[in-house]
Image (tube, rainbow, N blue to C red; front, side, top):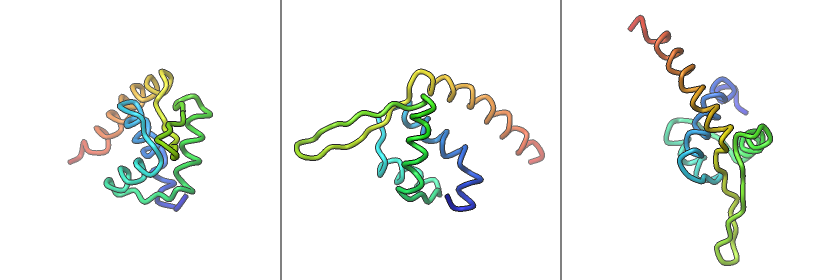
Length: 102
């Protein structure tokens, strides 16, 4: 993970959880979504994040076949949704503190 991504890794994880709680996500799709927000991740950076979130119980993956092709999709688990809700409170508190001086 590049140095700037290391600083933002928690925000990237929250972003992933946010989208995975709304709908099933896939690697290239979330790379593109994160890119729209200024994060530049390679597959070699993203997939270990996804696998780590899955190992920790925040995401669950499944394979979806479309003819001869298949894609691994990820959804937030109940544990992941609960963690996201708790994180939103913490992020709100942090942002309020970061921007209180204007």
